[in-house]
Length: 239
Image (cartoon, rainbow, N blue to C red; front, side, top):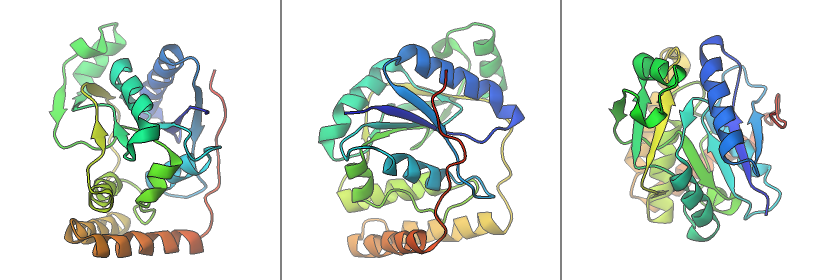
């Protein structure tokens, strides 16, 4: 079995410091894991497509894939528990029960040497992204993430509803925290964002209805299959 940590990443000046801290944490904490970055050729950064590609590249259906946002630090204990559970649970693992956004103050404290768990933070309620732990079998069993969500917004919330509806349970959480580092916030407006809003409303209406949700997920899969394939722009070991 091959374990990999995949970090969706497109270089941006305000995100570079957080990215470097996240890579350093994974490399130091899980030295046996292969750490790679992944992007696509899409003009708009597409987290849903990148996450789907990350899982699709797993060598075996039961390989464990950690998909970590480039600004988010997990804790080792919950992450290892999630990795152990992923091959046998049939559910995607979220290695946290608490999502802390450090903001400018907490991020500066961490950069100055303070332990991340001791930094100032704001609590983000109902978070369902940041770090995913899964296998290809589990990810594909409920359709992965809908690639019609492009740019920023809603792909994680829609995925959570699909997971809960089609697998009969939410993702499995492990007691602990993740810590989101500060960076400039991407704009969330414009025509594509409005399309994301409309699609998210469809997911909310389908929540709890397996037939409606399967139709919606399959619709997204068909558009994925008929559209241009994702092109890997950057994938390779990080030293």
